[in-house]
Image (cartoon, rainbow, N blue to C red; front, side, top):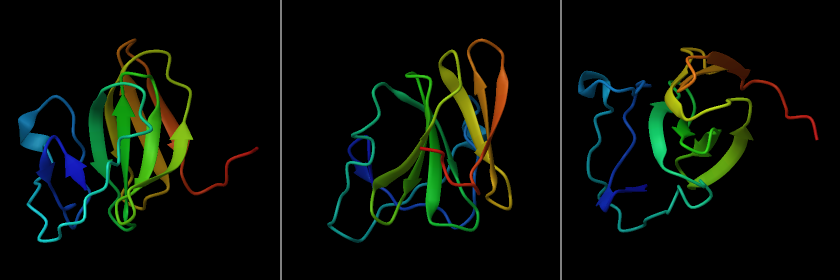
Amino acid sequence: MHLGGERVQAPEHGVARGESRALAPRLRRCPSTQEANIFACTQDAVTSLSFSPHTPTFLTGSADKTLKLWDYRTGSCLRTLLGNRDIVHAVSVSRDGRIAVSGSEDGSVRTFRLDVEEKR
């Protein structure tokens, strides 16, 4: 994955990232030369990130009021979760990987089911 000019590899365990540096994910350089521009379909700045503990996915929250579920092996966006009314500042994935939680600028906290198919 390519983040801010550095190649990074996802940690083995899920980590929630908010405003605190103490909670920031530990990223390390990838030995691979393959890079994926994983944030290409995000409309605005990515403000938060959380790795899923048991799947090869991570969740981002962004200034465009969306959450996106990504496959970090392929760099593809699997789902876009809508429902926040303001900038998303914090995201987290539950330990079992079934629930996502977001906190946004307007003070709201929202939950999303990750274990059900989207209605089309």
